[in-house]
Image (cartoon, rainbow, N blue to C red; front, side, top):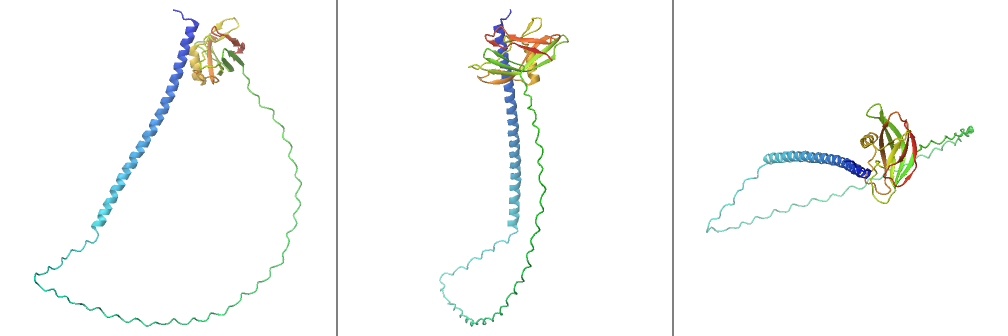
Length: 282
């Protein structure tokens, strides 16, 4: 059973979305793993602090008990004598002791006369002021020669810009990677893809971009080669892009190694196209 280009396009689009979701899930799993290790480290630190607190609180009461054991015991209680029934209570008054006489008041001696005031010696006059020598004239300043303006840095140019339906593809680089044998090569287009539409969409190169060689033969996007190029050059998946979103993209084609010049043309699923671009493989 042969699939139509539209069906194959939808199948590839679902694969792109699934691969992008798997990548996001892997990143989320890595973040959760790092958080789990951090929580485990905090728990271990709390356990160590708790054990240290138990040891310290166990040492303090031991010293306190020893100190109490070595203290002087309280005196024993001596009970009052019991009164005999029928005995007469006799109150013997104890006279107060006579007050001792107060000591006689002794006057302080009179103040001794203060010594006479000896005036400070008069200030010795300072030496006469000697003016500083006049400043020697500094040599005149020779201005430095003016700097020569550097030429402006060259701005890297794009290889070309394609407008495919509501997509804008700015091609910045072309690479040739080894193919499955010496007769094949993988041509990789690298650039920025921008969603200029009004809805969230996923860019799929199959059925959208074609390469045409010097003999008029056309080549579709090779999905396995594109996955490998994304991993090698660190590009994005261009999945579920919101309007105005921009991502770095890689598109790969499996072509003969003898061909060096190709023209980028629209695929069978393209409704609007601007900018046929001819590229030369390095």
